[in-house]
Image (cartoon, rainbow, N blue to C red):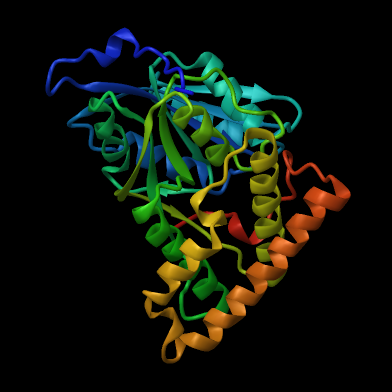
Length: 313
């Protein structure tokens, strides 16, 4: 049966070369160490082909100086706005709040624990000149020291993510999407992934944009690594059950194929590679138990503390 497709908005009927406007949503929980750096990278974006109409920061139960820093930026640039949730309610709730208040037809969602390259936003937004494109995602590159085991783990996983996404788009960390759905499931622990079936189900294409760089920090301890990986896997399992959709990185054969074509199974990297694979299997087992046995809700997840703090490119 054919899938009904949402009609494009009037703004999709653009003249060639017309500037594309977007609203950026920043989801934050106690991010005082990095929020100012992120906002500055947003304000410093090159915007030859797009316009940043507004930057909406959703502060979800913040108890540190996050809101004060955002208000300082808002006093200097009226495009920056603060939405404050008294109680922490999870990133999915923040995304939905952002969508209700944003005024553009193209929306960008990013976490407050990241930094953007100078042209990230316009590279994410440019593909929407094609009316067939419904969602785009950038390439996360961690700032961890790859000479340590945990730093290697962060780089290894995000590089595999990149290699898989080049074959079959799997979008994460920073995404842009058309306003073709009203909300994502409030239970979501993997918000970017939950958007993908909502976009694809209406006939739109996903586009991975490897030149749209976003910097993040991976876990620096095994405990934090397992916290993060179990939450993500449990979220993907629930999405598969509730929405009937699996992301590309749930396909073990696809992962094995890109792994065999990568340099990680050769030379000195092999030992650490096998160690990370073992941790990933452990994390997925914990996530499976959370989903199938404990029915644990990860929508408001336990923060992996070593992924936080100021990010330096």
